[in-house]
Amino acid sequence: MNHLPLIIKREYLTKVKNKSFIIMTILSPIIMIALISVVAYLSQLNNNKTRVISVLDESGIVKEIFKDSDNTTYHILENMNLDDAKAIVKETSNYGLLHIEKFDDIDALSKHIKFYSEESPSLTLISSLESKIEKKLTNIKLQQKGVDVEMIKASKININLAQESFEGEKTSKIDSVVKLIFGGLAGYLLFMFIIIYGNMIMRSVIEEKTSRIIEVIISSVKPIQLMLGKIIGTSLAGITQFVIWLILGSVLMTIISAIFGIDMAQSPQQDMMQQAMENPEVNMQVQDVITAFYHLPIANLIVAFILFFISGYLLYSSLYAAIGAAVDNETDTQQFMLPILMPLILAVYIGIFTVIEDPHGTVSTVFSFIPFTSPVVMLMRIPFGVPLWQQVLSLLLLIGTFMLTVWFAAKIYRVGILMYGKKPSYKELIKWIKY
Image (cartoon, rainbow, N blue to C red; front, side):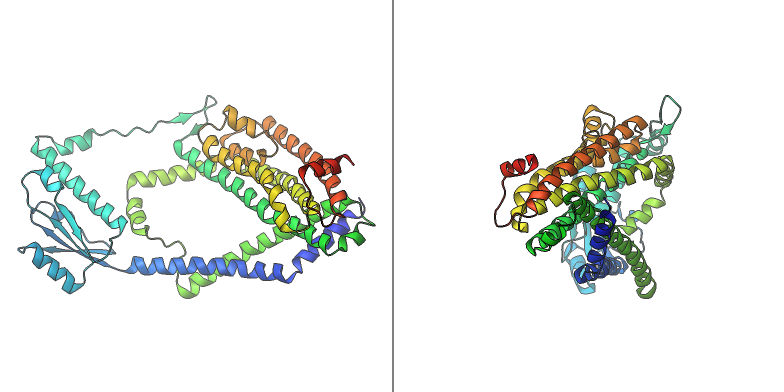
């Protein structure tokens, strides 16, 4: 394996010095930050716009609930009919008109409330108006039936089941959500890394094969050394590109926020979020999220993420390299891509739909040991607390499968790298393995 470091160095330098690699490394974060900036700027413009809503309450029982906020101003209209109110709203170019007809019966009144506007109104605004009116009319109806509304409010009891293991470790529903988010991000990052840089390895092999450079290289280097060198070198180039994206993206976001005053966190629902944060219950939930974060097995997550990420990526990269050696162009790779992508897609679906419901169930546990799905499923299970022996066993199976896959892939690589002008079939690939 004396040539392996040289091959890794060659592959790495070839990738990072490539003009298209350099251009995409620089342009990708710029384009992404530019898109985010445009969206944030447009959202900021939308949020800074003050909506003036006219309210014509002929019943006289609802108008007092409408209080002005930072982005919404209510204009109460009185002593006029609907046509006059519509005319005033059109003349003043107000956002819309909320009309509440006069009925003595609350049930009838609730069915005769309309919102008039020139354009389709905001769904957030309509939902907010509905919630306010619904709460007010419900309280009025309860009072009409002789029910003490304040007594009902005082009698309301909220149940939040405390969760604790037999060893005394406390958890909550929020813990499960936070764990799923961390596990899902880890699994999704691995999924995307395999697809992006696995394809890069495959294209690299195809390019060298079609340019006949490989015939010179293979005369002095063993096929398995060349394949591992390509995988590791391309992986290091990918990690370099990813790190540059993170650094450059962070710097660009800071510069744009400082110079142009654009809040990247701006969103159309910011008003609702601010109102929600004023609610003591929401503040308690935020505290629960912070507590759940500290309950995560951070050290275990970091170590497991690195080991499973590297092992899983190397496993799939060897298959991508074998496919690149077996074909002459990217068009011919399609018949071999589905068997590789299917386990990855299955792992993501298993993680999302099974791990959250029962992280220690039979399905989740079994697929966290199967090498082609374990990198994703096990990473999603670990935040929920997986015994160390299961993690080690899963990792050993994954590494063993990687070594076996590299052996098979090297055989395909050895024969296929010098084959030209013929589209291979699965039957021929099996023959190449037997050589």
